[in-house]
Structure formats: C-alpha cells, structure tokens
Length: 67
Image (tube, rainbow, N blue to C red):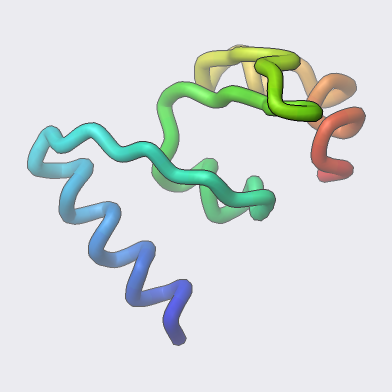
C-alpha cells in the first residue's frame, strides 16, 4: 500500500514537471517514473543510462540489479 501511494504521488509530481531524485533497487517500480538511471557500486557511478538505453541493454541491467 505504501509503495502504491508513493508511486501515485511521484507520478503526479513528474506530471507537474518536478525533478525527482529517487533511490530504489526495485527497477520495475523505477521504470514507471525515471527518465535517467544511475547505477551506483561501492559509492561510485558504475553506469548511467537514459530510459531507451536501459531497455536496450538487458545484459547490463542484469549484471547490476538482476532483473
């Protein structure tokens, strides 16, 4: 319930043009919101992608988050 309420609020903020910085390991949740993705490993940016790049690079996604 909390995740669905959070998603609802974040989608409304995004629709209003607000920038959102969100950290979460649940990629399916983030895919509904994010336009840009940063994969952090041991405190450093390991990989950066736009939504289209993320959808086209399943091997990298699998390597970082296992999804």
